[in-house]
Image (tube, rainbow, N blue to C red; front, side, top):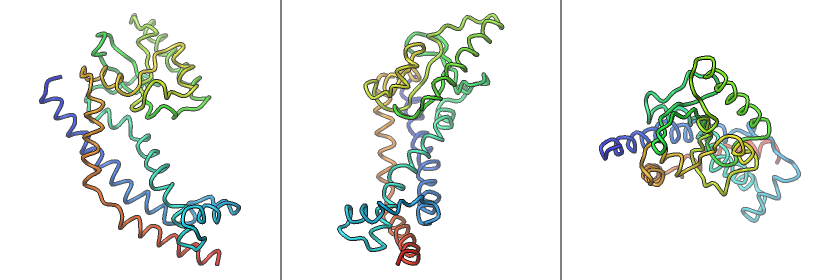
Length: 235
């Protein structure tokens, strides 16, 4: 990958983040977070959490205690996770796969072999049942390769984790790694691009987009809307 290609990928990543993550976060996540019906409120905890956060349990403090974890945590992480495959597809045209259970296929920039990859967002984003599903998809791909006279080895089947470090991988990923390689963060992006520090350049590029965003107004409006519902229901 030359310097022109590198800059193009980084610009594509920035535009993707603006269009797919920021826009969804502001228009959809905040809209949902402003409605009480979208919460499974624990009546034993919501006043405690409000007091813990703000020192009182008035409706607006309760609203803040509910909205902040949703808007600043779970909603945007879910949004990012759901868009992983689209991110890679937009950055690397032609990497998409038609093989069942495989998200992308690419030539590994380190060892030169073709990889069949399932994409995951972070080091704690799969559960126990996902492990068996991945094993089934990978074995099915190997079997399909044999049928079509393709030499697909165990090390050609990988799980690519978009961000994080190997030490952070959950026990479910470690179980997969006993049979198939799990490549995470810096190493995964190195294999995709051939550039050792592309992962950090990508993080910096997305950080540039963050500087363009000031969500204080929409966050305040979301908290205000929810506090009105809370006051009407619990006061």
